[in-house]
Length: 82
Image (tube, rainbow, N blue to C red):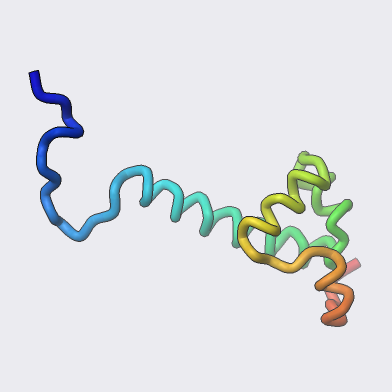
């Protein structure tokens, strides 16, 4: 019996479900974290508390998305809402 993985893929130009899902999650996380940090004045600890996650978890997301962390925001002179 043939497995689904053995069948040829139809070339539609569409990403796979998993690829599309990953892109959607990344777009959501990028928008959410950017807005959250803006509302928290760049304070990563406060942003993590507001999001209901640990600071370490938020830092992992920041690194994965290549977004600035607290140090980079401070060096850039970030002026958010306190």
